[in-house]
Every structure is written in C-alpha cells, then in structure tokens.
Length: 243
Image: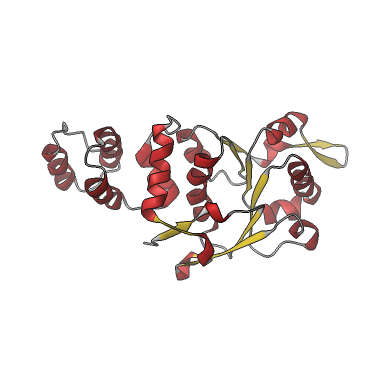
C-alpha cells in the first residue's frame, strides 16, 4: 500500500499528470478530487473511458462528462457544444483524463477547452501518457510524474493517508458525500481494514461514520466474524453479509 498522496496545496496553476500505462495516473487523480472539493465548489471531469462515474455518484460538486457529451460534429469540424461551454465556465477545476487520447483524436477540441478555460481563470489538470505537444504544453505551468508500480510520485505533491481521509471527512461534514466508505476506498485506494483501523484509532466518537462504513464493508463480504465482533463491541447491530 502506498502511504503518500498528492498535496494539492502545491498546485499553483494548470497541472499535467504524466505516466506510462498502469502507472497510477487515474488513481492519482481520484486522490486529488476530494482535496480539490475542500478548496473549490465544483470539479468537472472529462472522462473518456467512464472511470469516474461511480465516484461522482457519491460526491456533490463533482460532474463527469464523456467526450461525446462535450463535442458536436458540424460538417468536417468538431466543436464544443454551446451548453458545455456554459458548464465549463461554471467549473472551478477541469480534469481531463486521457488527454493524450483526446489530443490525438480531437486536437482542436482539447486546445479549445484549454484556451477557453484559461480565459475564464479555471485551473486544468490533464493526464497524458507522454509529454504533450508544445502547442498543448504551453498551457501548463506544473507537471507531476507518476509511477506507482515503483511507489514513486513527485515529492513536492506528497500528502499523507490521514490527511487524505481527513479531506473526505470534511466533505462529509459539509453534506457533499453520500457513502463515505465508498469514497475513501475509491479515491484513496485504501484496503477496508485500513479504514477500520484508522477509525478505531482516530474517530472513536464518530459513530455515524462507523455505521456507514461498516455497512458497506460487510456488503463487500470482508471477514464476517472479525467485523461482527467489532460491530458488537461498538454496540452496533449485526448487518447481513453478502457472498
């Protein structure tokens, strides 16, 4: 388990996240989103391969659009839909996952999004497998190299696991997260037992979190006896375990 996450306080401008396939780019972005939503009210994700849809169901202020939701084909031209220009202008942060693919398939669309967002003073986080072209790279002031298979992320962006969970709890306090366990596991890539241990140590009086989390953990069919014993110790009714 990787112990450090991205510290978005180091974000000064538009950010490129660069990494080879399976290096942890999408995982890194999922770590960033809860922190962004503590600081900003709206995050829009351009989600080419539908990797953020489930996460967005749990978090208010996070909007996800596929590439087909954004573009329209006009004769030989490919344009951004007018209604999407409005949505883009209302977003504090725009995350473009698989931006390298969009650059190859719809180069004018990616550049138009970046230009439009720059004029609206919106921050952009874009994900590439390789360094982007000079025309695209000029829009970005920072880059983050990712290789999670070697458990390495650029040091200046490190954030601890506890800080990451703390950001999620802050969003829950604001009423912006529906299922806190799903959000922690999805965005932090944390084993359910690590969540349990963290709560036992740090959140003994936060029973509303514990109940929500352990309902979801039980439904995911973790070790039945250990969970039931923990729930009974904390005077929480046993919950049906599936699987």
